[in-house]
Amino acid sequence: MNSRHQKTLETIFATPTKTNIEFGAIEKLFVALGGVVLEGRGSRVRFAFGDKIVSFHRPHPQKEAKPYQVEAAREFLERMGFKP
Image (cartoon, rainbow, N blue to C red; front, side, top):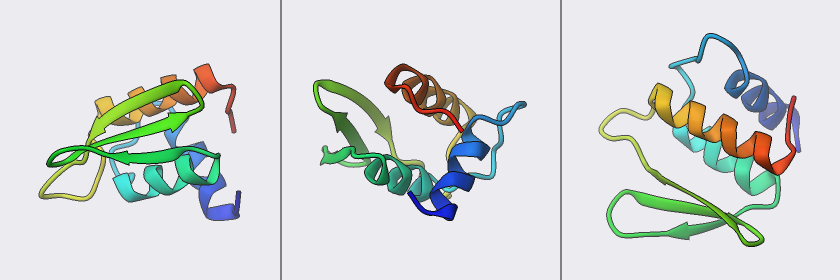
C-alpha cells in the first residue's frame, strides 16, 4: 500500500464522513489491499476479499463517492480488519 492508498484509508475513517473522496480512489485502495474487482451490469461493481463481498454502484455523473458509500466502505474495511 502506497502513501496515496494510506491517505484514502485515513479519509474514509475520518469523522464526520467526508464527501470529497473520488470513488476511483476507494476502488484502488480495495485492490491494493488484496481485493478483486467484479464488474456487474451498468454501474454495479463488487469487491471480493476471499469469500467476503461488498457491492456498490459507481456514482455518476460526478466522481465523488456519496456519504453512504464512504460509510459502507468504512464498515466493510473494519470487518476485514483494516484500519488507518
